[in-house]
Image 1 (cartoon, rainbow, N blue to C red):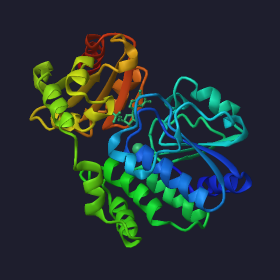
Image 2 (cartoon, rainbow, N blue to C red; image 1 turned 60 degrees about the horizontal axis):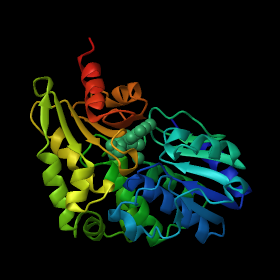
Image 3 (tube, rainbow, N blue to C red; image 1 turned 90 degrees about the vertical axis):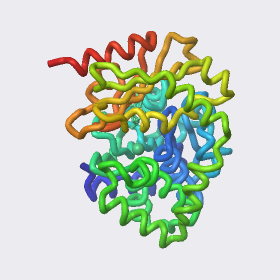
Image 4 (cartoon, helix red, strand yellow; image 1 turned 180 degrees about the vertical axis):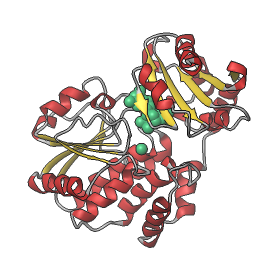
Length: 327
Ligand code: 5GP
Ligand code: MN
């Protein structure tokens, strides 16, 4: 649980340091990129020297390019060690990629702004609140503590985190607070229909073709309690789609009657088929998919988590089945 003192400590650290490296997790989603741009642009507008970093080399998701990601570096910038590292939406230093822990250790100081229940508190200052519906709501608290104005560009970025992490205000974290913050951001000029159009509409046909291929691989296992689907390199090649284009498909798996856990097993381009990334979603609050992800070396939230296996897609499924059938 974050407290007012965590927010004050985070603000104090930023006030003391004019040079910041803001970073989000690998394979960033809307909350990660909304937090990255929201906090980074706001500090930049107020005079901080801000560098942006999104670890990994897979293309950034096209749904969020309109946030203005042109100056987001992929390898960390050369002067990373001269800056305070501000990690957003990262449950652990490893979420910053293979060099994440080293980059945190090498920074002038580090600040961890996150809402994952399994956050490892890896930084010097940890602004962590598992009760926060999304990381961008924590960013908003921090910007308010710093007394910074919220421009329309920043408000839109923060709104993206609220909309995407709450499943468009439909998940358990779509609390009164999520709606209140959304209302505040709308009062600052955010147009929900316009944001919806930018994120969810105008998709290339390849995206829907990829979805069709993924859904046709559906397997119902453990008497229908586990729904699994697969993304192969062949699927990406055949549809000319990118790795990030499978986002959202997992919601269809979870929606099937009787399904308790939905899993989407993806072969990343860089893994040559030996590494598989697995996204997990729980259909019931009492089933904690973060626990399963932890066994696989990953993590996340109770209802949405993920892990990477150094093995085949079948290895990933075996691990999930084993954990789901554990007495
Ligand atoms: P997604 O399935 O959308 O990629 O991720 C769902 C949730 O699980 C997010 O909160 C994300 O941060 C977390 N997550 C996904 N993959 C990993 C992973 O490999 N390690 C950890 N620690 N968390 C992950
Ligand atoms: Mn998040």
